[in-house]
Each structure stands twice: as structure tokens, then as C-alpha cells.
Length: 433
Image 1 (spheres, one colour):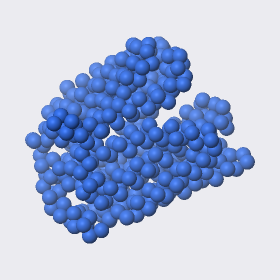
Image 2 (tube, helix red, strand yellow):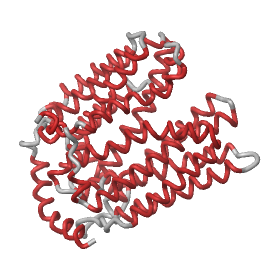
Image 3 (spheres, rainbow, N blue to C red):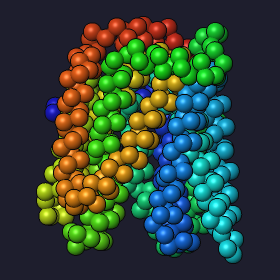
């Protein structure tokens, strides 16, 4: 009986044809993207032999991701989300194909790598809001918890398997083989997405994309203290306790340079365990508290990494941190998907991008600066402790998040009723496909 309660719920995959297409296209395309994520800095390092040149990739990606993420959110609420995702998926295919061609030149051009990195970030900003806003339209309201857990599979599998495959491809055939793999993954994903049904705005009075449209979304977010709480908790956790830039130094200090890949994969492995045992998620009503407790576990895991000298304990605590982050992420996604009106969902997804794009980048800066000012271990410990303190303060000062209960949420009940009127249309289109 206990095993049954923990077992992952695959109902959305079984019942919704469109969700299956979206899910498997996401698994395929993210796997390829993670391979390019490894190949791009590898090629820059090979061409320049400069740490600064490699770090500049992440820096040039921030602004386009933010700007086009907000604009992409406005587009997602104004036009057919299927068309938006198809256009950006095809654009990504072309951009990676340029990387492939450049890598095959006798002398690959460095400037091309930076230009494509900027364009890929902008393209991702345009696509992600539409992509994230699709799921609530494709599955029944009572299956959003299961769908949210399923959606995390692609991130965790991609984060574990993608870099591993990327490393093998780079060793065997250089950057060209990695980019070629990603081109094929985008092509396959595009064909799957092509078969999706149209996902036009539900109302005929949708405003065209504009600065006013974006500001309207921000005002809605500001009016929802529970949503602001989820954004705040995520930002705090990432800014204070995202020390991934220190992993190469940690591997050396542990006397295990060979384990660098394991350090990067450990937190994703912890998240994957939570995903595959997520049958308990629908039985939790206090989603806000789950968000907070998950973020606290993330901070505690990172702090404990700094006080152990054993590689295996380090990997264990990183997995614990990853499990906490996954719990927090699943319930953040549930609050968003179950309560945000469809006409606002794209813009809210655009705002969400700010937390998971800016947070890790600032976290890298904080952890590196702390390590320089103190030492490597203190950077992990201080970051974890500040995460715990910051998340606790956020929960205390934003009681709406802490008290959020699915049984009492007016926003959830409203969206649940609306979903009942659209469920028949979705089911009939699935049956007729």
C-alpha cells in the first residue's frame, strides 16, 4: 500500500495525446540542448584557453533572456501558443545548425559562438512562457499535480544524461558531433510539436503584445502575495545557495577530480528520486509550506556539503539538496498552474524566468566571491545558512504563501470551475485526433 501511494502517476501521459506529444518533444529537445550547453563552453575554452572567455558566455545571455522572456510572456497570452513554440523550435534548430557549420570550418570563429549564445538565449526567452503555459490547457485540472511531476523528468534526465553524452561526443568527434546531435533533436521535437492542436487565447478580447500588456501582468503578480512568495523563495534559494561554479575546486580539494561529473549530477539525481516517488504530491494541500520546506532542505544540504570531507557524503548531501529543490519546484509549479488565469499564464511564466535565470547567475557570483574572501568550505556553509535564514524570513513576512491551502484558495476554485467548461473540448479533440 505504501509503495502504491509513492508510485508516480502517469495518467496524463495515458489520457492526453497532446500532453504526450509535448512531454516527449521536451525530453528529446532538452537532452540535445544540454549537450550544446556542454559543447559551447568547451569550444570557447578550446579556442581561447581563457576562464574569462568561458564565463562571458553566461554573462551575455542574461539580458536577452530577461528582455525576451518578458516579451515572450506577453506573446504567449496573445497568440496561438502552438505557433509560438513551433516558430522558436525551428529558430533554435537553425541557430544550432550555424554552430555546427562554424565548428566544421578550418578555423572556427569565436565571435559566432557569442552571437549564437545571445540569440539562443533570446529564443529561449520567447519560447519558454508559451511552453510552460501549455500544460494547464492539455490536462484536466485534477491531473496537474501528476503532470507537474512528469514535467520535471525531462529536466532531471537531461541534466544527468545530457552532459554525459555531450562529454562522450566531444571526446569522440569534437564540438561538431555534439551540435549535430542537437540539430537532430530539434528536428524530431519540431515534428512532434507540429502534431499538437491549436492553443489560441480563450477570449476574443486579448490585448496585443505591448509594454502595457507586460506591466498589466506585473500588476497581477504584485496583487498575488502567494505568487510573490514563490518567486521570493526561489530567488533567495538560488542567490545564496547555488555554488555550482565551485564544483571544479571542490572536486580537487576532495582529491577526486574524476568525480566532477558526479558533483554536477548529484542534485539532479536527488530530484529524479523525488519525481519517481511523487505519488504523494496530490495528497498535500498546504502547497506554500511545501515550497518553503523544500527550499530549506536545499539550503541545509548545501551547508552540510561544506562540513564533510568525504566525497560520498558530499554527493549524498547534494542529492538531498536536489530533492528539496525538486519538492519546492513541484509545488511552486502547482500554485502557478492551478491558480493563474489562462489569459495571464504566459506573462507569469515570463516573470518566473527572472527567478530561475537571474538567481543562479547571481548565486555563482556570490559563491565565488565568498570563497575568495573566506575559503571554499565557508562559501558552501555560509550560503546554505543564509538560504535558510532568508527563506524563513520570506515565509514569516509573506504569510499568504505559508497559509496557502488548496481547500481554501479562491483562485484555485475559480480556475477549477473554468477548467470544467474547457475539459470537454480538450477531450473531444484528443479523441478525434
